[in-house]
Amino acid sequence: MDVCGTESAADRLWTVDEHLDDILATVRPLPPLDLQLLDAQGCLTVDELVSSVDLPPFDNSSMDGYAVRVADLAGASDEYPSVLSVVGDVAAGASDLPVIGPGQCARIMTGAPMPPGAEAVVPVEWTDGGAGGGAVAAMVAGASSGEVRVFRPAEPGAFVRRRGGDVRGGQSLLPAGVRLGPAQLGLYAAVGRDTVRVRPRPRVVVLSTGSELVQPGSPVGPGQITDSNSFALTAAARDAGAIAYRVGGVPDDPARLREVIEDQLVRADLVVTSGGVSVGAYDVVKEALGERISFRRLRMQPGKPQGFGLLDGTVPLFALPGNPVSAYLSFELFVRPAILTMLGAAEVRRPTVRARITADLDSPEGRRQFARARWDADRGEATPVGGAGSHLVGPLAQANALVVVPEATVHVAAGEDVEVLLLTE
Image (cartoon, rainbow, N blue to C red):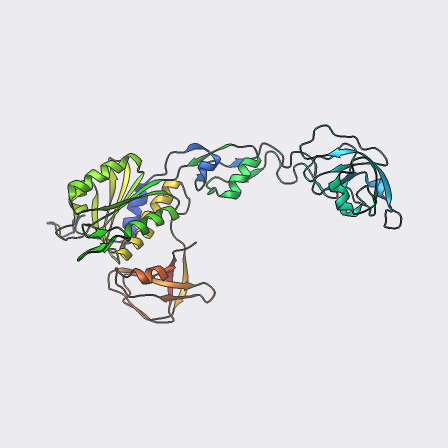
């Protein structure tokens, strides 16, 4: 306490909202750049996509069949078919097109341009294929001259894809801020764009600290544990849209930790550490970075100790608690919004819903609790899973949501309406 009776910035308890607001006021979207289409997958667009072309770019057939004049098929039936002269073939990509006059037609393939004079396409199944026998077999065999019998009339435009029927030149196709997936990239390619201006995916480096950590698959000796945090947090960063790199566990050596972080800055837009942020004798992250970032205590459970700041004035570093549940929930609440901000997303927070809780839940006074739960959308219910322990990774893997208990609430009874933060899309 200072002489005025107020807590110093280092000693006071921050609320969850204060900490997140400080993060979002500090982190900025990455500068936009132009990328080749496949390199832009997962990125968010900076500009609106407006088509400069019509799609399809010309009238074309939607079937294998014959391009015909409608008047020539009036009254056609099985008993009295219309007999047309076949004056040529039109394949997909053809540029030298026959002109269709009265009593004439052209054999045409799917996607091929409509020849001049033709008004509709009749599928080959409506004809004898020009051979008086099986229509499809004859079509494949190649009856491109002579005559064809057509057994049904056709309406103007039947089985014709009109120019601009999908997209018109000048049409707005996608707004800015769209995440580019397969369908969106295909649309860019379809309208002739080979590059797209995007916010690049942030490069996130994830590392765990602790001399007790061993890699999965290695023997676990006395006092040792397997490193799970770096795997969960790297996967979470990728799930948020980042390009994430996992660095193996770093021992409790401040000089070594500083060295590793400095080495990683060449490929990092954001750094995440877990462990070493509390008040113990071997809290290596606080020792190594105490003068470069801010360490805080938050009014939340789990995840009270947190660290955040900018390395070299540009690269955000998040120092998360070491317990697996605390680390993962801290990532969801604070790091994920930062990654989405760097991507340029308009909405960076996980969605919330209201649901009935199915079991009693106690919560510490003055802390906002985030209790792991299974949310059932159909029933509108949230069922707590596991206890309050921040080391319980088994229940964490079963949870798809968090029940949010406000700071002033110490008990929630089964059946009450609660806020639920969703951990899945």
